[in-house]
Length: 408
Picture (tube, rainbow, N blue to C red):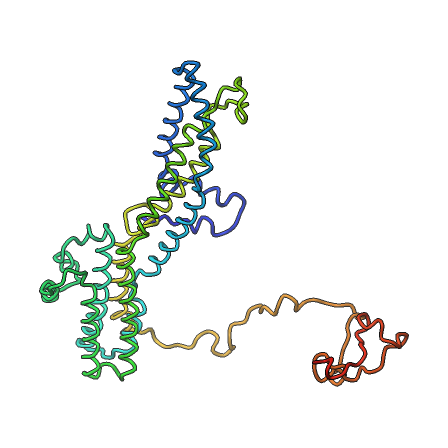
């Protein structure tokens, strides 16, 4: 279930974000604690072997290995590779969210263009929106395990009311191994054309508007299906994963605390627990876990999209829009501002509107005193008093007249 915390940070306050650190469901702690415990156990085992098991010559050899691994760990560009990968995955995640098909625009177009308050008109409207919901469901059950578990077969679609028995037989007769989400869209367009022939649609532009809205809906279904089909290249995912785990496998040895008595540079203090290495592990592996969760948001993780809730919402909205909302309009009444004009409130007049100046700084320059064009000296042909040569033009705003060639 998607973790929503917007209400907790609606107002910026002291320690506002710190309250989110105590949440467990959907948190980085829940994703990472197993790997962190494994890293700590491996680090502790190596440290205990160095301190308690190895002989003196073996310790000297191990210390050389530690220094070598610590120096070599910086050669792995883990921050660059991982940062770019997470940016790609995040952009892909947002694109998948924007591609989720919703029937709201299609419902508005159908309700506004398909006329008829009789049973035939109601049947046409509800059938059109049901087919649109069916198209979206065929895509969602192909990309979402949660939706697939809820609707594993076509029989379940019939029982849920998205499909009728004749429609199911027509779908199953199609000799195509590909996803058939496009078939209800074809049915939609054919039925809309039939409604135009029956006079249910007032004119050709109304039919065109309806089909354009259908194509936008269909393109989102297709885009969502292709997001599931075409993943981030596997080689890039492998490179990032290998880089992160190779880096911390090196850190298991390279970040060991050595005997301060040996005088190795950077090992003057023995803390036994690598605090900053653990922070680095938390950030880098946590970053990788974020990408792992976002790369397919239609799974069953805490922060994945609520596919089944979306299916129920879209179907309910579609049916309500065709009956209760479109056919039962509220009575027309005058609004409360009928006689008083538009609602009034404190207007925003500009950030510089309330600036006040002293009277001695207020200057009024008439239009006739301004030159015909920028840079034209106009009527200011005489030098200011006390400066006959015009040497202080920058201070007084007066400059000697120039020729046409100089102005150009």
